[in-house]
Amino acid sequence: MNKKTNKSELIRATIAKNPAAKAPEIFALLKKDGVAVSLPLIYQTLKKNGSPKTTKAVKRGRKLGTSTAKVVASSSSVASPASTNDLFASMQSFVSAAGSLDKAIEILSVFKK
Image 1: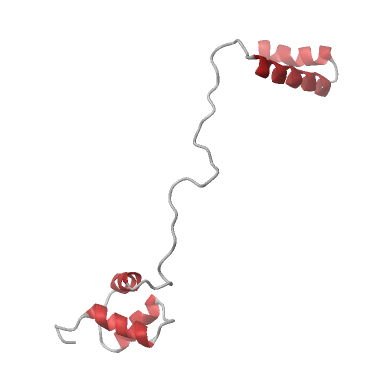
Image 2: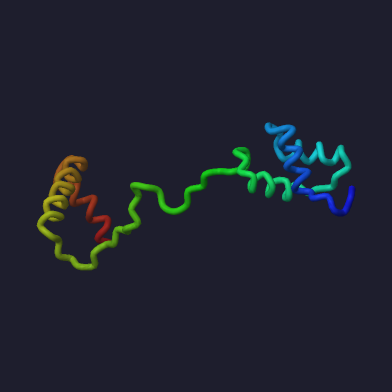
């Protein structure tokens, strides 16, 4: 191989002859012709040429529709009127799941200890 031979030009010429060839195939073809090139150079040349085989549409950042807000527990023991209604409904469902108010109190007494 001549010192003035541009390896990228040889890669582009090989791509032009074999447009469906992937990087390892291009590497093998050039090696067979006696041209010593590296796979990273082939990938770089493919990327610069805008080859659809190597360009990927990478979307970075958060996905649409996701929220970055975190739920923070309130340190105050006073509940707002809206959350009082929710708390009452939750307690009713807990008591009905326990079977009776006495059983619900018995279950809660375990947490008191």
